[in-house]
Image 1: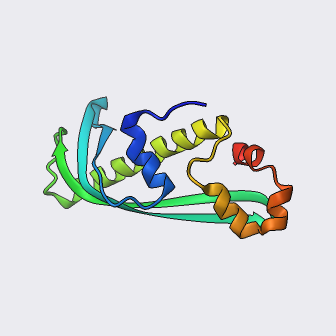
Image 2: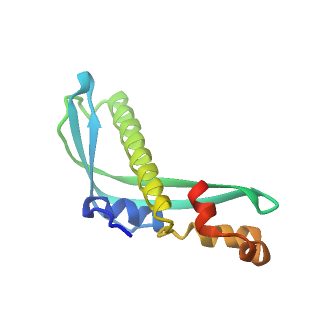
Length: 143
C-alpha cells in the first residue's frame, strides 16, 4: 500500500471532509527563488466534491477547498499589512495546496485506493446499476 507522511495529514483530512481546525506549514518560493515559509493556524476548511459525467462515462471529479485561517508566522520579506502582499501570499498558498493535493491524489490513484471517498460521490451521481458495472479502482486511476 503506502503511507502518507505525517506533515501531509492535515491535507489528507481536508480532502476527505471538512476539518474543524489545524495548523499547516506552507513552503513557498519567494522572490529570487528563495524559500519562504508561512504557518497558518486556526484553520478551517470546506470541501465540495462535484461529479460530472455523460451517461455514467467520461467521469470528471472536481474538488473545491475553501481554507481559512490566521497567519501565525511568515519568514518572507513581504509585509503582510499591505493588501497586495496579502493577495500574493494567498495566491502562493493556493498554488501550494493545489500542487500538494494533486500529487497526493495521483499517489493514491497509482495505489488504486480512494481514501477521500470520491467513489461514493460517483456512485450517488451515476446510480447503483451503472456503479455495479463500473470498475471503480481502474476508473479512479484514469481520472
